[in-house]
Length: 368
Image (cartoon, rainbow, N blue to C red; front, top):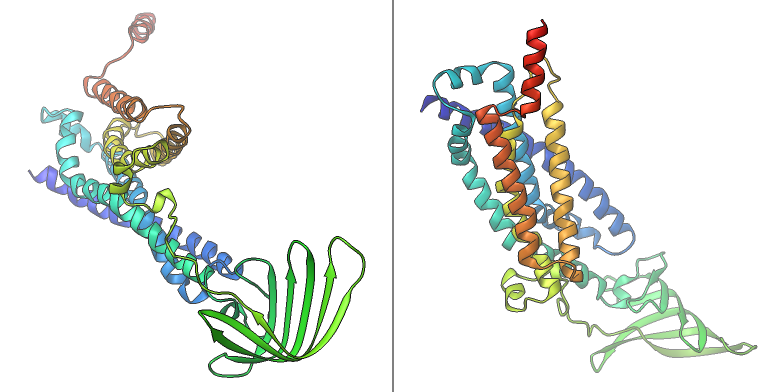
């Protein structure tokens, strides 16, 4: 049908433009946050773009759902303002008959949203987590930047040295501050060299001083040395050994359906169901008064999406804490919103009004 084809073309243009704008905004915010993490030493500065890309892929499902919702509301609202709906209704078609062409356009997007929510979201989080862990578990000497104080992986040491060799195996002007449960130690040396023995790395210091101060007593011990070996850590941490629940595959969550896993499953499956419900809601709320403001429906669409998305997050925490069951929450939230959306659509389709309002209108017409 020509009308269906024109609606789908306009929806495609509006959906694409909205998605580009939202992705640009999210990428800008993600870049600022990732750069902030890189300055704090949580992310490798050379992997900022990779971490940002994985983060955007993880949040692509809600961005697609929001773009689809805004596109449908915007296109149908324009049709109401330009009186194109009058032509549609004069042909004997109601508002509910728009569901078919809209879902004809939306079903590939809904399929992509479902795939991203169930597969893309955990994969992106796993990759980003792996990058952060690999960078966090690097050797202590690898953390050191020339002319900067850097903390060790365990958080008990602070290093400073000037690297003066291409392979970073030797350095000069070495400073190491160590704080443990019983004493504080400060070591300085004019030169240091990295030596590997038995899978561990040692920093062999030359021509330096060592100061020790017990934490539970008074006094201080100062000594000089010509050569001293200091262990600088080994990389025994296993990357990905303990993944957070948001980075675990959906199949793993289904295999072990505890409260935390069910909460994450409710969030992932809820994204797909929310996108479906938002299409129905978009048709119901698209009718506007041509004399009203042009942005009223779009503001309501943003508000409705924010509320729905926050309910998904609240439901995840409620299921995780055991306050609600998985099936009960999914039926109450998504089933309830679907029922409200269908009732709203039926009201708009049949032009229903409350009896009290009808009597008031008749009385006002009789007085006039």
